[in-house]
Amino acid sequence: MPKRYEVLERSFINGRLYEPGETVVLEIDSPGSNLKIAGAAKAAAAPAPGKTNADGPEYSAKHNGGGRYIIIGKTGDRVGEFTGTKDEAEAEAVRLNDGGEITPAPGKTNADDDNNDNGLPDA
Image 1 (cartoon, helix red, strand yellow):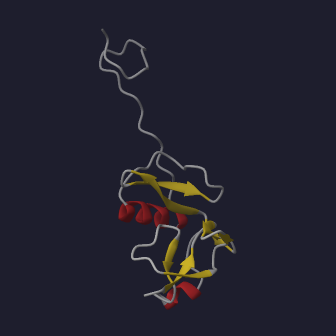
Image 2 (cartoon, one colour):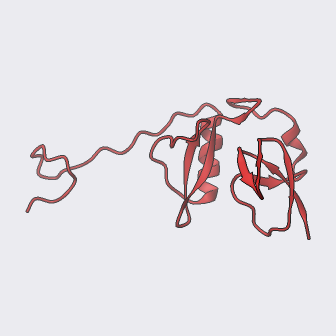
Image 3 (tube, rainbow, N blue to C red):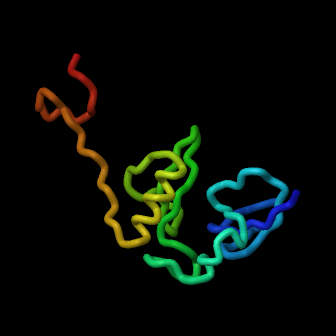
């Protein structure tokens, strides 16, 4: 049964480029992170809190392969070092869009403190 989906980020679907906010009718069971069921939440019509503009949210979750998700910025570049499940990534994107800070990458630790910063044990 065909369903209407709203495009969340610029996507190439069935030979056509869709911009955020457009709707597309597809016969699929589980859309990717770039689509959501249209009309599922009427609250989407009201502007959401956080950093958004006409092109959509500043940060969003993106599938990275192998069941892992990352956070990307509006330009499509990876933001920070977050890796997690879809639900965790969507929650992190909402947190960042609401003004949260980007979590820096964890520092490398070296138990013997010999300034060897490759992260591998000494031979």
